[in-house]
Image 1 (cartoon, one colour):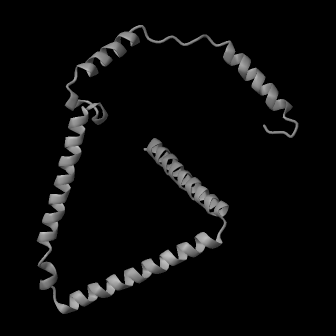
Image 2 (spheres, helix red, strand yellow):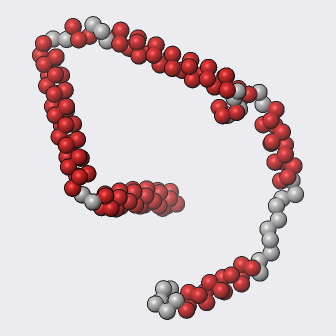
Image 3 (tube, helix red, strand yellow):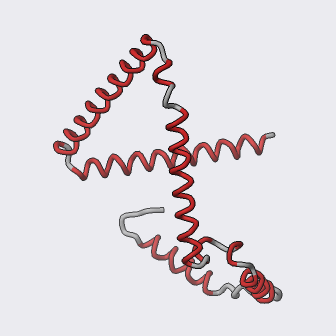
Length: 157
């Protein structure tokens, strides 16, 4: 309903505004206030460790982050120890193959990095942002089409 003059659109907007202004206000259920207050009281009564992480005392948050960091360091150290002797037990052929693949992947990464640098220097940033927006729009469209297809197929069964 788009015209160049815009008059039908303005009339439609005025009509919609009148219809919406004439609607009675919606009323909340009578028990809503009591239920909200009861839920707030229930959450306030929870001990700190059962609440969200941001509600924990600062000392507890720091202690948890430090403990998780130490646990991560321990896991990485154990993984390093467990794989220490693996390289020595591999045959020369397998080690050569792994080294070849590693060198090929490194070369591929270097070429990709050089290509990205070249594109960044030679392509205007507006084009790159436009391409990124197009990719995002296509992604959203793909997800939407997938959801619609799923809904249609579910409705049939």
